[in-house]
Amino acid sequence: MIKTFMISFRLKNTYRANSMIYSLKGLPIVHHLLPDSLYKNQGLKTFAHIISILLEIINTFLGKYLYCLVMIFFMSSFYQTNQAYTFLHIFIFLTIAGGLLNTYMFNPTKDKYYAIILMNIDTDKYAVSNYLYTMLKVFIGFMPIMLYFSTFIKLPLWIFIVMPIYVVMIKMIVIFFDIEKYKRKGIATNENLPTKTLWFIVGLLVILAYGLPLLGIIMPQIFFITLFICSLLLGIYSFIVIFQFSDYKKLYKIILTIDNINVIHNANSTETIKNNIAETIELNPSIQSHKEGFAYFHELFVKRHSKLLTQAVKKQTCVILLIIAGILIFVHTVPEIKIYLNNITLTYLPYFVLIMYFLNRGTTITQAMFINCDHCMLTYRIFRTPKVLLGIFTQRLKTLIFINLLPSSILGLGLVLILYITGGTTNYLNYFILFISINAMSIFFSIHYLSMYYLLQPYNINTEIKNSTYSLVKTLTYFICYLMIQIKLPTFEFGIAIIIFTIIYTIISLILIYKFAPKTFKIRQ
Image (cartoon, rainbow, N blue to C red; front, top):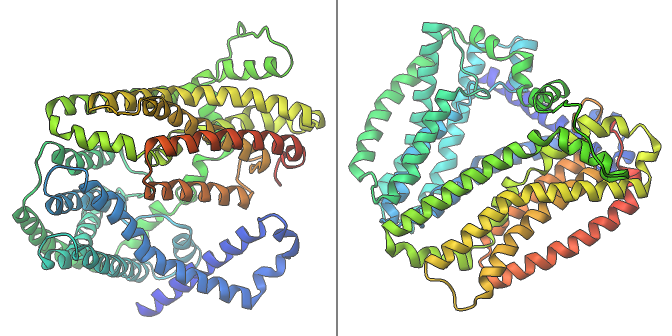
């Protein structure tokens, strides 16, 4: 079993190393200096292997630390209940939800496909050894983090010690039920394709985790003790079942198909996207435009794709309205929370940068532009001249800003209303700045995504992303937005900064589009 694991571990590292080299070759300037023979360079591959191992170590600890910090510790600080027991309460339910979604064993990855299907490795030994390694990583990753939180969260030390064991046991129990389902019905669980029932259960667990403390209800310590003992006994039995199960090859053959391996890719493939978009396109011949030039060209696109462009933001707006209504009802029910919410609206504006990042529809809309318009128009040289590009860009930017302003305006008004009913502010400019800054964030992301599309056009004719720089900028954008939650500035100061930054960014983007887009806005090979 150890030999099988070592082979699979080297295979996974080789795959990661080659992926890193491929991404490196996709960077601008650098790709001209790196030949295809780079994959044969032993020194570079050794370096890539070392980086891969370092990433494995970082993934073991960093991801779990951020999860515990943001999803559990940070959230537990918002409630009026005892923070220590709220921390434990949230941990209990989120662990079950995570166990249901992250099975590890039934995640159809390419390294599993290469090892089991192409290399015909001993599947039983491969499955068990890799799963035990993954559970060991989970345990080792959580233990120091739990001990760290034990230094300032007032719970008995033994609870933090058994928390990682509880996580591992829950995950093993889930695998046990998945194996039993396969034995009875021949149905293999695919982690990448969760069912609606599973999503419902996970949603219910999340509501129990975060919703019950709002009502002042948290699970007592005895509940965790009982749950841990039950999970430990069932988890040990599950481990025996996992170890003794001998039909992994047939099970993996069900989930390790090309379609399942590329489920994320297929979701973004040309055919799938075209089919999804085709269902939303209005082919009504009565759709016309009375405008001229760039405006005429763009208005026809918007009218025919109005459902695609606005459907998601309408749903977002409805959800935001429901959340705001829920907060207002909660404030009326629990008046003592007013001071806390008032403080949030006056000091936590930087958090909304990350929220607006997730709400913005820039990526989806630019992808629709490419599939239904640009992949054909880019074959004409006139479409890539500075004047035409800037004209189309400005028309599209107006539409994108208008679409994304619908949920952001409701969110801005909601925050202003929450600020007012929770005690207001002595500086009345805060109301204005709060509303404008939320919309400025929305405008920034609209400009940012559209500028990225024009300056780093990432797609080839098959709508595959072939520009590593584009992926890198997207990752950095998320990382910077995430870092914003570490900033605590008064709403007035941060809001002014966001508004000024958005104006400057808009001017710079227009200049860059005019100067560089004629060279960069092209179909990737």
